[in-house]
Amino acid sequence: MASIDIRTHRNKIENISALPTVPGTLKRISSIIEKPRLTLEELSHFVSNDPALASRVLKMINSAVYGFPGRISSVSHAIMLLGLNVVKGILLGTSIFEIMQKVMKGLWDHSLGCAIASRVIAEKLGLKYPEEVSVAGLLHDLGKVILILEYQENYDDSIRDATEKGIAISEAEKIHFQETHAAVGMWLSQKWRFPANLIDVMAFHHSPAAAKVAPLETAIVHFSDILVRARGIGFAGDPFVPAVNPVSFEMLRLSDGDIRDVLAEMEDSLEQPTDF
Amino acid sequence: MPKIPIDKLEPGMKLSKPLVSRGGMVLLGDGTELTEKWIDRIQDMEVDGIYVDGPSEQKESKEESLAKLDARFLSVEKEPYMGRLKRIVRDYIEALYGEH
Image 1: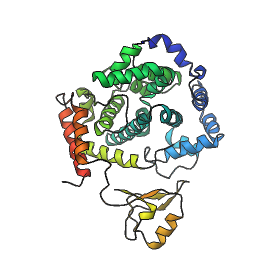
Image 2: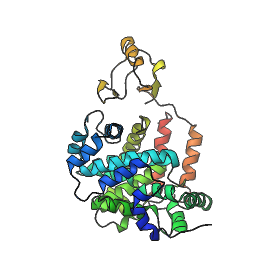
Image 3: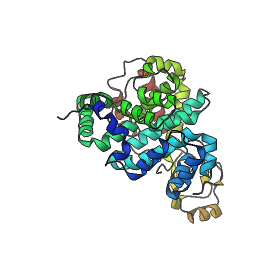
Image 4: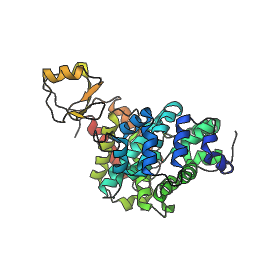
């Protein structure tokens, strides 16, 4: 059984545009969002110049996932309303949708469910930017997409191992890659100059006690991930519900009714068309 | 709230979600009661179905659904808060099948 140390591949992964398995759309998006001083105008120009991309982005923003149904009609309007980082995240979201459809369909439903749950919980907690938490939920498993694309055999082994041994996919990843998708997601979100909050969520959604910059946002995505699995929505690499971190769960102060609300909103939103 | 294919719509059904055009415009608000005229118009549009009030039809039986829930939680039920979480999800699933 092949095992690699993914940490020695960090440079290769960060240089995502050179990976042969990565589709052109994601490469183009990566090259724009990694720019050090990306302005609103540049991003708006980039998206508006590609009608197919622009329509996918608007479709996602206007979907139930983001809670602005039918209200945003232009890319520049979206960027003003949601901010640069959320639109960067949604751009990535639409391009990973394409990949997930091909390589691991259930991961898209898992990611969407997590995005919705994260937004609803962030709203309940009165966070100022619930859309940013939603983007963190949408992208939290981004590292899996890269691992599946570039190291398909090792990833297939990880999925098989997880199911056969009854362990979490992240545990199986440690066996086959020495590190997990959370680290890969963190490397990429640093490269893409995402805000520190999002990087924290990417890195620590399985170990929320380690989150220092954004413990609350990390706790939200950590719990959303568990809730989506608890409801049996999508597939994220193994069929089990992981245990919640008690401290993170207590931080959220959710009542039974709150959790029911999140389940209901997640299900309602996922019943609507989610092909971006 | 079930999603009904457009050829199964009947006058008197009430929308449980707004009908939104491809361009993102709200065409009919939620709560709108469908008339023959609305149904004709909707059938001329490119939509695959409409959400109306009423219990959803579930893809699998309640027993299957609950058995899968048990399997998913098997190794974590005794962990802090996980029993509570499972009970909430179980109640939620049961309610989808029209009990409570």
